[in-house]
Amino acid sequence: MEIQKVYSFLRDLRENNNREWFAASKSRYVEVKKIVDDVAETMIAAVAAVDAEAARLTPADCTYRIYRDTRFSADKTPYKTHIGVFVNPPTGKKGITCGYYLHIEPDNTLFAAGTIGHPSDVLKAIRQSVYDEIEEYRSIVEDPEFRRLFPVVGDSPLKTAPKGFPKGWEHIEYLKPRNFIAEGPIEETLICRGDLAQILDPYIRQAFRFNRFMNFTIEDFI
Image 1 (cartoon, rainbow, N blue to C red):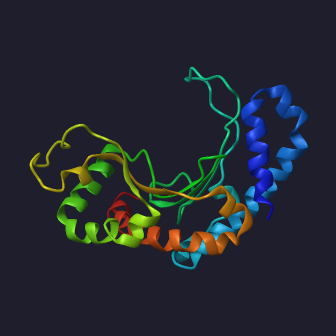
Image 2 (tube, rainbow, N blue to C red):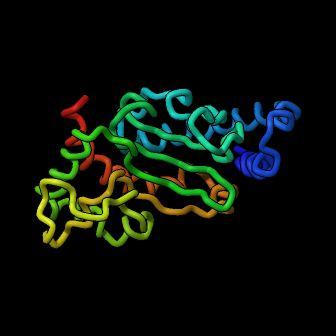
């Protein structure tokens, strides 16, 4: 698996984000797409070792188009300059459950647990679960090994306590995220030179703990 070719392509694309260059480089992209599918298959198998329902997924369930939707964006560059692989059992990348995400981008590679963009009723229920089961939640996100791999917990926080929860609660920061995710960086050199399944295994195992907590609540909405 030659992941360094993915990074090389993305670096060149970042400098030449236009349709003419992409058309001239289409054969490179076809090769990159095959490598990304191999990455997805490796991730699916690695996740399935701890989260069995992942085994039903295919690379198409876990990967994204490289073409940007520019309709409502001031940035009109036509292509993404990163690759995302989101193994999200049981339904794939469009499901509302929390899953396992590998973000491949030059100088910004990371692994994340969770998902973004939950509907308001699901988000409220997640916050209620964290509030009701705070000691269990803290045992996950404050575990030293979890924190080593996922130093960032929660994304896009509210400035104040969410509606319906006491402002003075000592753990109120855990309820403020709009996106309940956990993420941590991975060195590009490590991804390129090592056994991908072995590298991701500790991230996946810690992510499973986080996702299991979240999905216990989210499954009521499926």
